[in-house]
Amino acid sequence: MKKYLMFSSRAAIAAIATAGLCLVSVAQATDETKSDSDTSKTSSTLSAKDKMFVKHAAKGGMKEVQMGEMGEKQAKSDDVKKIAEKIVTDHKAVNEELKDLAEKKSVTLPTEAKMSKKMEKMSGDNFDKDYLMAMKTDHEKDIAAFEKEANDSGSAEDADVKAWAEKTLPTLKEHLSMINDALAKMK
Image (cartoon, rainbow, N blue to C red; front, side, top):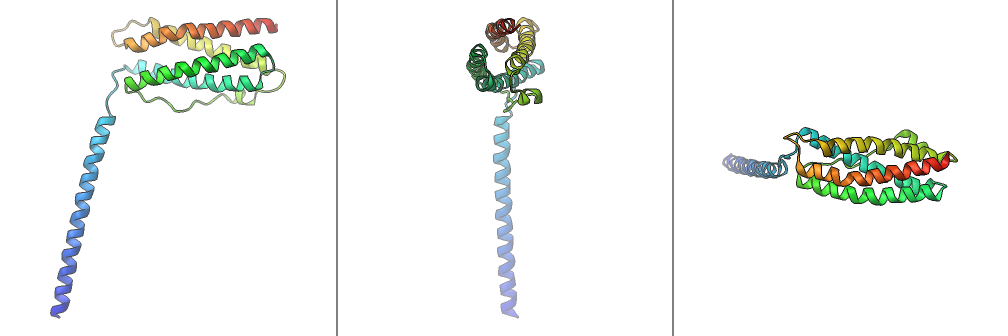
């Protein structure tokens, strides 16, 4: 009986010690998680409107690259292929600038943008015109949003976001001009 009590006592002490070590490990892990989340929660200095613009611009830029790559592969006209190539090149550069700006402003950007079902199904003889019409619509919407951001003078507006929108506008307008010229040749 004495051996049994000694064994039970030692087992109980070992169990208590193990439980104590587990609690210490959990406490340390919780402290590390808190400190990691504290540093990752650096709040953005952007207004909700600026954050929304930046995220929308990121999605639009990714979509333009995807659609441009599709245009490079599927277009029949050399003009349309050149426009698609220009759009891909320019939007990749602009997307990198936006990524840097978002990082600086502590804004998490979306990682993907989906093309419309209509765009995914485009092929055949009408591809060039359908592609250009989709690009025209997208660029007109983008230009309106970028002009609004560039011209917004509210006190909560971020100067860096505004400057990026102003800097990017001529590229978007150049794309739209190229698209309109190509569409005019098709009529």
